[in-house]
Image (cartoon, rainbow, N blue to C red; front, side):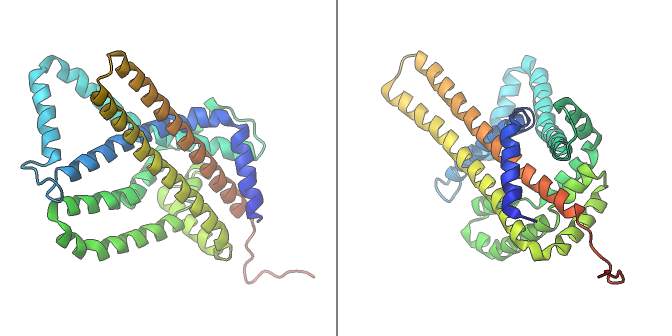
Length: 312
């Protein structure tokens, strides 16, 4: 397997199939970016009001919850529509990216093999593999880096640095185990989506495929670097976007811009938000394409049994 050619082929495929980015990559990236902005904003404000910095009488989480309940109490007529809207948004956030990722993998694999597959057909195939893939994503979220760092931030913020230091070895072990599991489960989702395997069957076959290709560790390193770059880009974007918005708000309040300044601020913020989401979508689609091509190449190779004889 020629690694550079596979990565180059994946990049060319991504550039030639930009509709995949718009249809399958952009909306999940937009949702992830928005949720990431709220998450980072919450973490910053929660740390600011914690005993580490401000030692506020009430935690930021308590303030948020009480504010929401006060708003519901003062606006009873809006409660039902707001609850329904919140439920719909949560369902979209958790379910839509899974369906679109499954659809994207199906389309990429089929087009790579010469099949003329439309984007609507990809949605159909993605829906058919939704349930097992969704189950697999729930398992992987348990071992995600964000989940581990969120737990660490909670302990540091509420229990203090001394207690956090005692948990550092545990977090290191969790991170190492998470990294190992992510490497071993690298191809599980592709077995689930492309080969119609169950969750446990896909995980077992993924571990086997990774072990059989230990001599090709170099490609795993490259692919993991691609994933790491994608995460770094998303983290940077998630930090930059709210920083721009907050800075612009501070600037607005300082010089007392007229009312149309808020409109300009909103437009500029939306432009940065959509740009960040599109860039994240491009990197995500490229990364998935590399993994899909690698999975097809690895599973196309024949592995000989020790009892098989090679005729000279």
